[in-house]
Length: 80
Image (tube, rainbow, N blue to C red; front, side, top):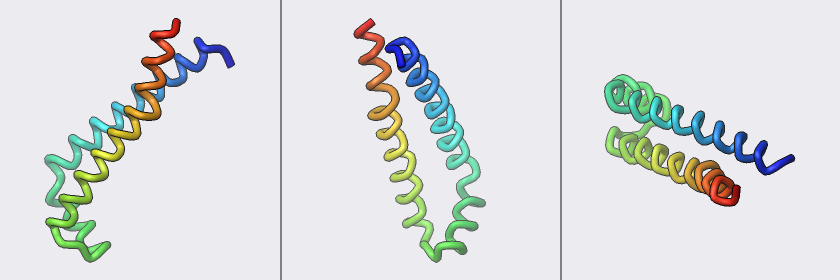
């Protein structure tokens, strides 16, 4: 695999993951009440626990995207 191919791959991975992150973040905001009700019944969690879980999910996903997609992509761009 060439460096250019890997760079393109990581660029697309970053774009797709950032788009998914934006969609999830936007869905958690306005639809939080409905989603929390469903998840509270499914998992037996309080709304405070669910708020914390949603925040942790989005934060950990963001860190994973930055660590495994964005940083390697930027490193390859700087190398070229």
